[in-house]
Image (cartoon, rainbow, N blue to C red; front, side):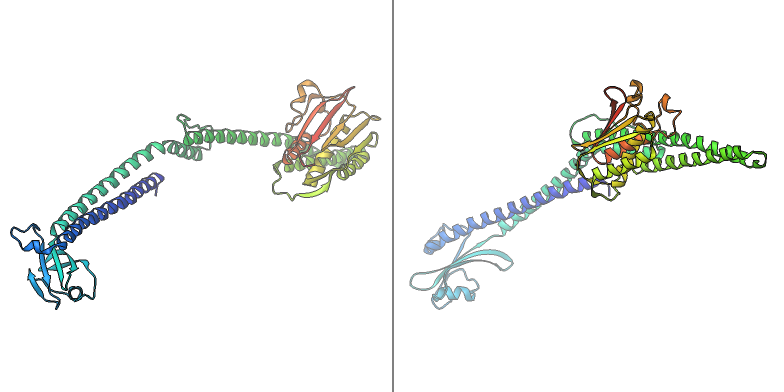
Length: 426
């Protein structure tokens, strides 16, 4: 069942319920009023029943019957005497109204006791009330049906106009599903929630288009980066097939190249896997001492770069997050500083107020490279002669974002570069 049809049915159902309630209320109120008028006139006539027998009778179409204390008709129109009338006549019951049928006529009666014994019964034929109520029922039924039909038509027209943006969104979504091209846009005219829905839909399409384009660039860059070591490895393997023609020194050099290329491949694939983890929402979150983690990574960096001096000033800091990913990010920062530092220089590491800073004394960051150092696969002209895949600092940014933090790079006073990793939970 379509949404338009459901809205039409809901509108018709609501109006039907309201009209039915109003019609029933009108009918029973009118019925009560008509019978109340009849009962009031019958009660007035029952107060002085003797006037009914003085021609001309002022009672019009009402018929008066006097019932004696014995329960039999004494004067007036003969009517069936029920047990209730006899009880009033003999004084064992109070007066009452009743509706009954006599000779196929619908009548309304009042039975009242008389002083000195007996009872008076005033009778009126109320078929005309039944006729009027029947006509009223027909009128109310027709009005109700007309109201429901008008509500259904109005609901269909309103839902058609209201759901027009939804139909446009649906058509756009279907075209995108068929073509796989998220460049489709929907009109954003109008006001209200549905127009905001169109704006949100277009914003979502823009984000989707950007994500797809980013994915395409990522795949293209990854393919390009993987192709270089693979080609080199393939070339070396082809040369090694003719190892009987090589001297031991050349063979050893080829094996060293293969080992280096295998390490590059491993680091590149590890970086790609790290970036593919996204925000890390599926990674187990634990509470740990970040300063102890940084201290371990600094010790590892001292072993990796024995020609450099690593100084650390670490403030006790507790974090909740992924310790493995943060350890990878800290290592990437220290490895980056180690690559750019000249032998014999120093790298200063500090942790205070939830901010980790790593300062080296290398050549610093060129102005044209500063905005791109955290991009995936970006390598400056000066870095192309150094080992690496261009993913290290991109991973640092991904890890920072996953923990609600930021990372930035800047020139350090007196030369070199300084990188700051700020984390929200500290």
